[in-house]
Length: 101
Image (cartoon, rainbow, N blue to C red; front, side, top):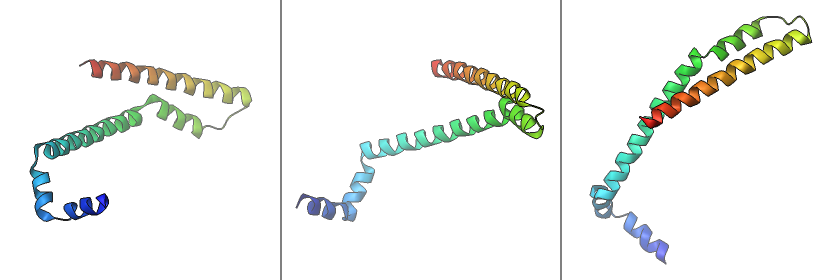
């Protein structure tokens, strides 16, 4: 019964218009648009950082070489891991600085 009442209210044009003009709904729409815009900017920044990433270049470089033996592969993987860890630490510090601003 309650669902029928809600459904009939939602399907009335004047109710929808009044809701759309109300301050809480407008504010919710503004906050949603702001959050989406910030997420897009953050995603774009993150993708640019990944493309500039030393780890990405190093992985591409290491993948293009043919390994001599297992020890060589282990050394290469260790270098990639260390570079990745350093970039994660640097990104964490940068993120912390941005949050403080």
